[in-house]
Length: 69
Image 1 (cartoon, rainbow, N blue to C red):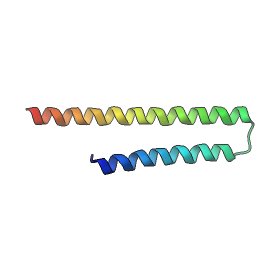
Image 2 (tube, helix red, strand yellow):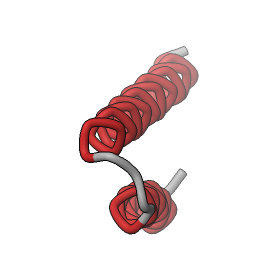
Image 3 (cartoon, helix red, strand yellow):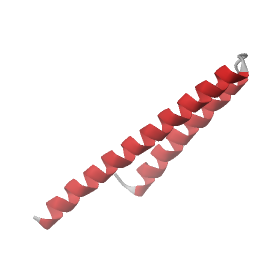
Image 4 (cartoon, rainbow, N blue to C red):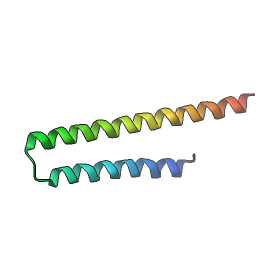
C-alpha cells in the first residue's frame, strides 16, 4: 500500500469519526447519554486505527521477509 492510499484511509477514518461525533452531538438526547456515545465512538475509532496499524505492520514485515530471502 503506497503513501497515497494510507493518507486516504486515514482521512476516511477521521471523516467517519468526525461525522459520527457531529451526528451524536446534534441528536436530541440527555448530555450523559451523548457523552457515552461519543466515548464509545472515540474508543471504536481508536481501536480501528490500532488494528489498521497492526495490519500495516504485519504486511510490511511480510514484505521485508520476502526481500531478505
